[in-house]
Image (cartoon, rainbow, N blue to C red):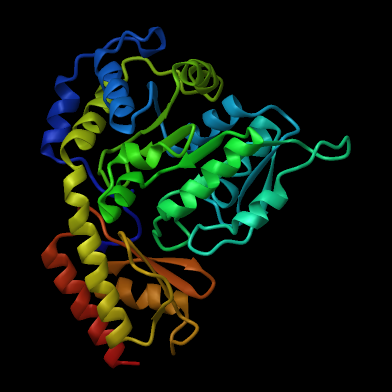
Length: 342
């Protein structure tokens, strides 16, 4: 099965497995695991931040950030399809006691006038706006990259009102590859940034949260509250460090594969792609197709390609490190065959 469901499905390669076995470890709760410490140091340097924290997942990193930035009863301004709003089990409300203020978006971009209008004035009846939330790349936007002009506008707005900005950069390095920008140049617009080691970079587990030393010191306590106090964590940090150091450059291959598939989808099937394919995610709408989304998932699976039904009328293809050029050739053939059968 050629697995295009997500870039989270990749398996650790032989090098990663060797590094896991050979990792020098210590108790990370005491901050004595040298491999974790090096991963955190390197991640902070790469993002241009003072410090970083290894977390078990992107969700845990995001929740630690919310707990650090906000207090109960506050509100977070975000787009209405943000990952933290849809896919993280209402954790910001359950754990931090804050509520989302969601706004319409286009490929992750919220109208700045609407964002400013959503910032609460001083009034006894209203919650306080405690945080502005960005997602880059944007998952529901089809792996879309937030433009620098937009990031500049959000940063200016946040500074004007004295509100911190968090960036859910689960696929931050896909954004960096697509724009030709350094990761630190993107991270500079946010007070804190979370990114995943276990998506496009292909590590088996883990994410990073970066910010100021003071922010990370508090976030470390919040991570402990969330059950993220790890012991000899170097065994999972080692492949993450390797992925961060050695595998960022290969993301271009995933992007090229996605663009090739998108061309075939648009020209040889009755699926419709309504977003720019900038990175490794394709959301193909089925409202113009003779097959439903569920039927497309089933038909592709029967031919040997796994995708997911992403919305009621859409399927998602996500290229990743375990999908080779030969695999893409095969998927192209499958799409052309299914397209001819419509």
